[in-house]
Length: 164
Length: 102
Image (cartoon, rainbow over all chains, first blue to last red; front, side, top):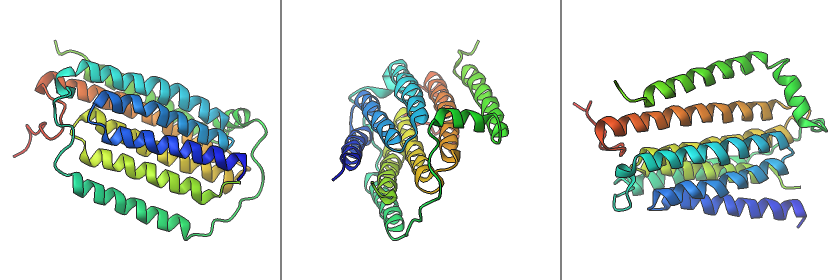
């Protein structure tokens, strides 16, 4: 077993265990905090896949910003997230069977397909290649994403603001 | 080298976990957490396909970065909606937010 395989299975175990805590913990704060190891494990997966820039962005945005945002909202809505409250609805068995069915379907699909190898190698310096691509062939997607980001942030401020 | 299918299986399981959270949680914030897990599963797929299927281009990583950006937008708007719902309805349990139910 190579080092890459050991790292992959260790990271997968971290992701799956913390993901289980996220979806099953009766305490919503535990769920939010368990998101951090899940996101960091996915960061490790990105590094294994040679996507260092995406890994850095993942740490900054997911493990940093989104988790803190979730924790802030949990604190601001204390009355709705209290420990005594029932956190799960009555669809437990249905939801579990749907999720298991989707997982089985996807796993059967990917394991029964023969995946070809693409030609070429990853660029030696992926951040540079990503920057070139964002300001070259993908300029429209880049600008569209920035407009969506601007609009959604203004919208979030307006929605969350207190009504006069 | 870890085969591509292993990454895809991992991503499928993470996606199913997120789906389970979305289907069974009552708390709006926990539903958003499930959505974040599902988006991360999609990102694992994109980056894995980038390395295994088209290593010459960085298109998959570009896509993953755009998905991360849009996930941040979605989290910001979703949490703002949760706060607004809490302010006007005193609850963030989505099965109790049914004032428009006939």
